[in-house]
Amino acid sequence: MNAVRGIISTAPEIFLLLSMALGTILGRLKIREFSLGTTACTLIVAVLIGQLGTFTFPSVLRIVLFSLFVFTIGYRSGPEFFASLSVRTLAQVALALVLGGTGLIVVLVFAFSFGLDPGTASGLAAGALTQSSVIGTASGALAQLGLPKDVLEHQEANIAAGYAVTYVLGYILTLIYVPLLAPKVMGIDLKVEAKKLEAELSGGEPPKTENLHYRKFQARAYRVAAAAGRTVKAIEEEIGSRTVVERIVRQGADIEPHLDTVLEAGDDIVIAGRTAAIVAARPIIGTEIDADEILKAIPGNVVDVLVDNRKLHGRSLQEVADRLGNDARGVFLRALTRMGREVPLSPDTRLYVGDVMTMVGTTRNIERAAAQVGQIVRSGDRTDIAFLAAGIAAGLLAGLISFKVGGIALTLGGGGGALIAGLVCGWLRSRRPTIGAMPPAAQQTLSDFGLGGFIAAIGLANGHAAWLAIQEHGVMLVGMGLVVTLVPLIVATLFAYHVLGMNPVITCGALAGAMTVDAAVTGCCEVAESQTPVLGVAVPYAVGNVVLTVLGPIIVACTFTG
Image (cartoon, rainbow, N blue to C red; front, side, top):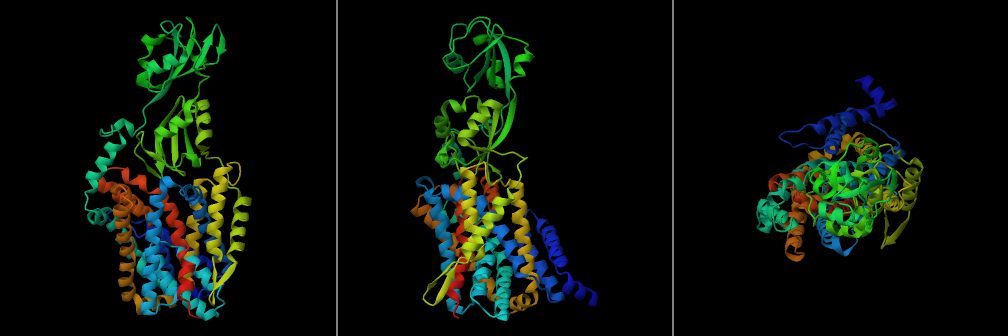
């Protein structure tokens, strides 16, 4: 035991990394598709290891770790957050605001009724509303109050205790409520409503399987005979299926394939599109030829494009195609993913900033279309460390600014400042793709490592005090947590369905997004036997991340009594 204490005093970082490792492993374990999640498991492991001795970590370490996490959250949500401030997505924004506002009110009612200190109230909000970032913003706000060291440590221990007790309950309740109870509150059958929405999106008919999957794209060469004397536009329209003439070779020379270009007998042309359409084009054009040399000049490609054009936010795919016009010629949509989940495709499917469109076509056509939609996702991109570091520094500086309301100094704290900086930097990146690169894999790594390290440091440093607080207030916090989770969900459901008139399937997806619980989206899709709930996730998820995160300083300001 003395050896363990010696390691704790000289190299506590070993236990921090060990807590992260064990917490991640436990968080991945699933029982009938249910898991506690990495964050909760890391905190539980850290609190238990914290019973072995006294752990001390430099405050700058915790600040940097949490800033990495919350800045990344802001960076990821920035384009969606600012794009959501439009009439087309106002209802989904309102749902997220109502849910977060109701959660704040319920927490403050409990805090004032039972005399909860700022730490316990913040931990209750962080766990019951399933938003781990509240721990960091609340801790940052407490650190700005100039509290004695022992008082600050006690408050941080209460945050950890409140979170540890209520997070698992809040997570489970959200998983149960969104797919199973929310439809009952609205008086609907989620499966039936999903089928109705699918039919509506497909123009009154049930969506065909091929609308949801990739249909093979290829290019073939033909020698013009029957098509002689006709324009490129006329041939493309007769073949249909958005087939495009990619190349025209006339007597060994390339002719630019404009829509008004007239084909001549003996021209060799390359047409690209869906296999079935171009195979059936022979009677319209002429004989298919074996011309490897002209086909090699038409390289095909499958490319992921991140949507960041705000003018396309909230518009249907049909509207997007109309706006792109000729820029969309020869480009086919293989898939549309939102927060890692595939979205059902139909002409009425809405596109949001942050979506990823998988485009199929020739390299030239894809690059032309991608320039109007967003930016091509390239696996070789490297993180712009200068942009990242400068952004976090600016956020931490903004977090130092405070102003007084009554006798209380209100401040965003480092966490809130880093969040705002992340939002702005993510938005700037969407406007100027040449700066601030942070590939999705890097975002996930920084987010996981930052949050995991911060949570582990909190649990280890306050393990003993947190364990005592859990023993003392555990039962009471469980009851409060149940109310803090369910009441905002019920209020938001009723508000969305009866006041905003939102589609119930979209409402269920929006509730999962506003609570930032990805697994609840999966549950909705399974119950609905449809991917349509995903359509409501993106905007509430972006707004919910911001709204719930800033609750930390607000709760501290409202409950701190000096």
